[in-house]
Amino acid sequence: MLVELSIQNFAIIDSLRVTFTRGMNILSGETGAGKSIIISAVNLILGDRAQLDLIRTGSDEAVVEAMFHLPVNNPVSELLARRGFDEQGEELLIKRIISRGGKSRVLINGSMATLAILSEVGEELINISGQHEHQTLLRPDRHVDIIDSYGELWPLRRKTGELIRKVKTLSDQMESMQMDEAEKERRLEFLRFQIKEIDEAKLMMGEEEELNEERTLLANAEKLFKNADEAHRLLYAMENSASENIAEALAKVRELAELDKGLSNLSETLAEALYGIEDAGKVLESYASRVSFDPDRLDQVQERLRLISSLKKKYAQTPDGGIGDILAFAEKAKNELSGIEMSEENIKKLKDEIESAKAEALRHARELGKRRKDVGTRFSQAVEREVSSLGMQGTRFVVNIGARKAKEGEFSLDGISAGPTGIDRVEFFLSPNVGEEPRALARIASGGELSRLLLAMKKTLAQTQVIPTLIFDEVDSGIGGGIAQVVGKKLKEVSRHQQVICITHLPQIASFADTHYSVVKDAARTGADASRTITRVERLSQDERVMEIARMLGGEVITETTLNHAKEMIETAR
Image (cartoon, rainbow, N blue to C red; front, side):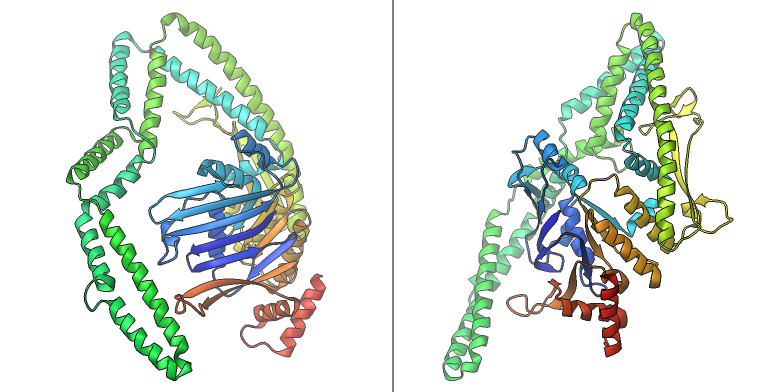
């Protein structure tokens, strides 16, 4: 489970450390207090791309750390072992550092790791359900993933996808081999030219972004140096500088403080300001000395970017494609070249291989479809039971599974549209009212119904998924009253088997907490940040919890009646 989360210099969080417990952890607070920022920090631990604008103003980097407790024989340790990491103990520490320079570092138990590995690990540790997942639920292309997760069909699905890709690859080779000779020679020459042009460029992933950053610095070197040098002089180096004036003022205040002890704090404030200005001056001086004036290097960078831009226009699949698209094009061209260069005597052998691969792929795809229909029936029944307990009695939830005839130009197996997920199209239909025909979710479900349906699915999927920590980010949108209490009870049931961290505005849900935290936006009280906004997370005592539930019930004015209601809600939930 997630034991501890530490966040530094992230958005309006200067320094924050939260210790979580087993069971149901509730985070509540006013809108805008910073709850969503905490979720953004957790997403960094799960491998999300870093957004530099979330680094706290005045800081060079933001740091997020998460400590997890791992049971014996857990999938995370096995995954890390396969990736070459040393044997993991019962504790797993993930650290993510993002800097203004754009570099992001990932440390897993002190060892460097890539974002790809972090994403793999994150998928085994935490699942976040937020309001955005309502939209995901409305997308039919994601419904097949839910069914395959519930039925533990991923091994068969991966095998089926591999076989279908094999058939497509062999079919593409066959198409290339069956060109007429003149066309074949023209195509060969063109492919060789394209491959040579891309290979000679020696492109590297991430190169374009680094070059753009370097170009910006080189092109603005004079401005960077001038501003840094001038700021250094104003603060520290010139006559009558800020540090000189403050030092003179500090001496005067210290004389005053000897006579009036009440001015001691002012003396300390001025001293801290002086040290801060001196540090800033030294940083600016160091920065100015490192500014590079190199016109030749700027020309090299611009020429390299022009080459990359030219290759993108030729070979990227989309207008905003990058180096990855160019390299993928080269790989595809090499495969096509290899296919064309095969001798005619291999065509018959390839035809036989295609037929055999088609038969095997269809066999696996049909077996996958059969098992999906069985799983779909079980899943729909389980979800109907859960949504019924969430106040949607009489609701029909239908998993529609079937193959689709291929459109012109679409890859197919015997005329059936086929792809990485097989030959099935899976879509969820809902009838929330007795007597109505089930319809697609996007056409019928309200926000409150989607919230309850999503929770019902999570509860159902919890029977097969082993993800230890579930985070619910305001999935109670659109519900309230008695239904909110039922949702809280359902979350509590889930927390018996998995750690639950839930952000909510509803007291009916918060009353079920095993541990309750209050997220507060406040002004820093001391130090250099005294005038800035910060986010704090406070673990509530029993009395504080009653007050927080009362606030959620009645707003700013808390009466004795509201307090009694809050106590009653907590006791009822217990």
